[in-house]
Image 1 (cartoon, rainbow, N blue to C red):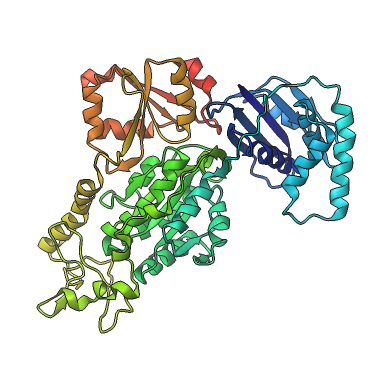
Image 2 (image 1 turned 90 degrees about the horizontal axis):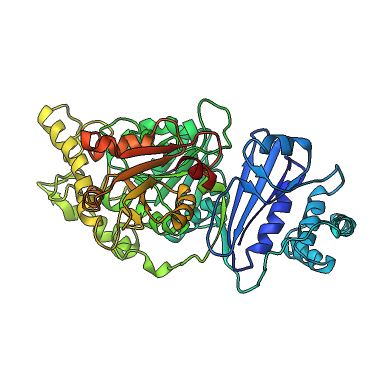
Length: 551
């Protein structure tokens, strides 16, 4: 069973509440559900559309809308350019229009008025609403329930088994970062990364600072990390460009950081609330090419939950900047999921790299003295230097963004410059050696026996998995750690005797294809006829129908 219901109307008319009441109801049922919201940038009166994708066996995204509630004519004219609106219910302008649409929807799926009132009350039970508003809700429900009774009914085969978690991408990133001992977060609100602030600040054990711009945000995060905090920041769009200098600074100082970059539509300052996967090459080349931050791109909600802890640990272990690359559809869409939380799975090495009273001696510079000096940037066998914290008794800690010797003295000596440059790069070789094993793959292959493979990232996965269920000759390759790239990927492509690689991206310039073509030598003659692409750049996510038109 697949069913799609959408509510669409002017911002400020409560269309979001109607959508939330419906997802709150379905989240308590055993369904695979995806809730997508597409909204225009102006806060009041422009069109907001909230779409509910409901299935009994898999998550999906489609341009076919089974039931479309339109609060005004713009809802229809705007959305019919993108979606196939199979059944439209136009609601005349009326008071409490969101309750009207809720009553009509639940009536259509065979709910009586008592059940509908209970569903609405369940949604509002912990929200502060006045008695007047509550009464008006009930009056609207009753009025439009009577008018909707004669509408054609739809059977959704609703069976209440048990409740799944219903969460959005930003929520899971925030929750697991906090679970993994995040202690400092800085940000300036920027769609679609803004709700990270809401989710993180509800945890009182995390210090949060909102600064005047992203330069201050990134610098404060570096300061917190310098002082021993597990620190992270997040933003979107070209505000990430303001942080470029701090990326190279963090790399040079080896004061590591974790940055969440939630992609949205460019260029310049318009259509900022829509999705594209535009920033991959910029993230890989953030600041200057010789900086090379570690870049990860989770491919599912569960993987995002697991990968967030790994990223915070990696930053501490390898003293290297890391970027978590996501997109608007990941950040703001909601997903029903049986999330496997395992708070006991935290890496045992965390306590060895975090300052506390039990391991204070670990960070005592006196333990690492050579010739009466503490070599903060000591060249070691694994290229990872010892470090301490500013408040450690009887010791100083200096960080410098200038080229430096092993003891942090500034220098312009050419031999030392070469040594330190190599040191900062060779840490990534240690990262590859330590972190890649059979228990953690940096890429995932779905349907390994296929000969044709879609190559993609994150939200496209849902659509591609549905497609290959009907077309078994296709498989999927999902890249999760993009930089450094896993050499095993090339070995798989060669051993599987791949006949075709189809790059699926939400950008015009084939960014993933360009990067992998270069890294995997796919530009040689015997590969030129084996590469194809599916590109979309119209503000909206990939739909199953997009593939059916092309493949």
